[in-house]
Length: 227
Image: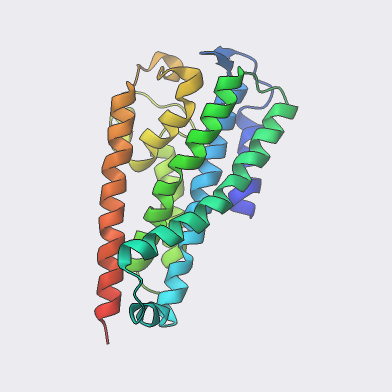
């Protein structure tokens, strides 16, 4: 719960709370709030999906293989459970933002929260894929640790520009975070770093969803084939 709720809330207090400078149709405080809520949501979905590592270690994967449940259905069930947990950090961080000066119109609040919540499903699949590929008790830690690195590259923690921004646009969190902030920023980046069209961010999310889902299904099938 510390990494899912407390850490994103702390980062919001440090980097965004009370900053009333305008950005799009909102202020900087809300821009940072949405970013931190998105980070908390993906940490939640990744962590919940990481339970698959423990299940595989205990042989639960082979037990499930004896049932009619297909690999894609298994991935879907894990994603659904993770989505319930992802709503917690979004609700709490938005509540903190509302109480501390985050400002935007009703569409900004509702649309950004909905996108942050729905988009976090991608990282439930990511967490499942990593934990199915890297067997053992450290798999969940690897998945969560990589999220921190991907958050920096994905323009979540601090605005980027130049070569780092170009590289970051190819990483999984970039499209997701950009879509969550789009209702208030309309794709314009801080520090006059440019503009991201919706199709670019959607393409990023779709591409990584396909990649992670494929890896998760492959990892599940590989685990079931082991004796």
